[in-house]
Length: 115
Length: 111
Image (tube, rainbow over all chains, first blue to last red; front, side, top):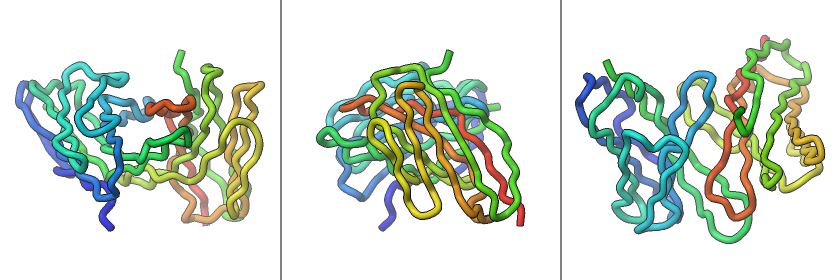
């Protein structure tokens, strides 16, 4: 059982370049998320998709776009990369049904450096 | 002011010691309190969670929530070198998709 798979694992971009981070989950989860992790800042939510066909902004959405391609896949796009977007990006998914705890399963992360 | 505050440490303890980690928060709507463990260059994984106030024990790990003080804790008994990781607290209101995370505390258990 692969869980949450992210690609690529590492990427170096020049300022102004674009790229897409891919994420897929095989747990039949309804909700998917993109976080960024920076030293001393913890995990900050960029965008999330509560269910297939919906997306919503999180805490730090500026400079990013997302696509929920189907129930399994949720991509994050940087249209014009900036050095401030250098970070480790995590995709996560959860069942998110009912009123119980929203337990997230995370991918291994994608390390992005923008020069 | 951040919604969730967590001392980043680092914390270094000898093997067998009790590790004590904590977070404070400001949002009184939070009902679910979680602890994630993150090994170096890996994604976070859920350690345990509690609902509302009280204690929860799972093996060597104990989570405590004091909603009146807006303070949560994680205790690791008989710590092992394999417990060396960053521990992140996270919390959410009921029926909320969004979790608020602390910055994480890095723990090293020395053999």
